[in-house]
Every structure is written in C-alpha cells, then in structure tokens.
Image 1 (cartoon, protein in one colour):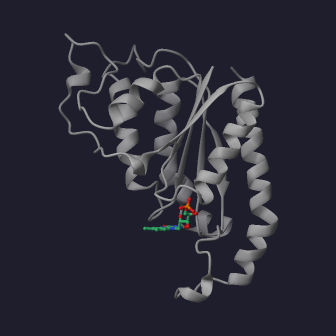
Image 2: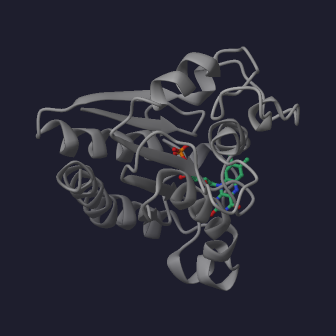
Length: 215
Ligand SMILES: Cc1cc2nc3c(=O)[nH]c(=O)nc-3n(C[C@H](O)[C@H](O)[C@H](O)COP(=O)(O)O)c2cc1C
C-alpha cells in the first residue's frame, strides 16, 4: 500500500512538514510504503486551461503539461491514501498547493453529471492546515468557508470525505527577537508550541493510522 503526503509549505522541516511526517509515521506503523513530496522542490505551474484532460478522444484523468509534477501525478494514481498539507497564506492554501490541486483535481473531473470522478479508486485522504491565527480568529475571518471548496473537490475526486486537522497559532520563527512581530504574543506562541503542538502531532499520527485502517 502507498500513502503519499504532499507538503505545500516552502519550508521542509517546519510546522506543516512536521505534521505530515507524523501522519506518515502513524501510517507506517501498519507496514505501509510512505513518501513525502515537497512541492517547493519542484518546478511546475497550475492548470493552463488546455482542456486536453476533457477531450473525448483521449484517456481522461491525464494532465498534458510535462514538468516536475508529471511523475508526481502518475504516482498519485497508485495511491491508497493521500494527505495534503498547507500553511495558510492570506486565508487560503499556498499558491504551490493551489497550483498543485488544479493539476491533480481538474484532470480527474470531467464535465459529466453521471461521472463525478475518473480517479481510479475510492481512497481515504486527509488535509492539514497550519496557521498563525488562533481558532477564534480563524472563525472570525471565515477561514473554514474558504477552505471548504478544495475539500469538496477532494471528496468528489477521491470519493470519500477527507479527514481534517487544523493547527492554530503556530510558531513562525526560530527567534522572535529578530523579527518585527509585536502583534503576536511570543509567550502565548511558546505555550502553544509546548502544549498544543504535541497534541496536534498526536492527532496527525492518529490520522495516519486511521487513513490506513479505513482502507
Ligand atoms: C506569505 C504568508 C502569508 C501568510 N498568511 C497567513 C494568513 O493569512 N493567516 C494566518 O493565520 N497565517 C498566515 N501566515 C502564517 C503561516 O500560515 C504559518 O506560519 C504556518 O504555520 C507556516 O507553515 P510552515 O511552518 O509549515 O511553513 C502566512 C505566512 C506567509 C509566509
């Protein structure tokens, strides 16, 4: 069995990557092949609206663009579970994650009421978000409403409702002294890092176990 984690953060060992690795650890404890894909290591762009993937005379589900994402998209067709992780940038997923989702989701959707997806199998998935804001601020800014659209399309393509994990009030710098960040309370951030982030990691580990058990 193959489980893939897609890191939509440019940082390879910070909050999002840490949680994604925990998911993979949780899944690996069940003897599964795991792989973390760092999107920001790859050169690619979003959908260019060529509609090759919608042509009647071509195999559906294939994106015509050839770049670093091509082998990744091929691999994802063999997945038994996928977990997507993104920091929140401007109250949405990062540009790297949204370009990736255009390339992954759109070819698997054809304009047919009868065929909601051409992805080869129904598979479980998870989505992890990390962000600066607290849970209350996220609520206030309507963050979950913004993110629902991607989640709905992931459900449509992969056939199951994704598991969700929100990690709030994340630690953003190694040393807060060095950066202008007076709008944040470093003490609160440190508390969150010591107390809440380990709980988020545990929840991520359990997400990994669940993704595999649900298969
Ligand atoms: C360009 C940029 C935009 C951001 N926008 C938001 C935002 O709108 N809301 C928020 O809560 N955090 C925002 N953040 C903070 C990140 O979401 C947060 O630090 C996240 O945990 C970073 O993930 P990482 O540690 O995996 O890189 C932003 C960070 C950057 C660099």
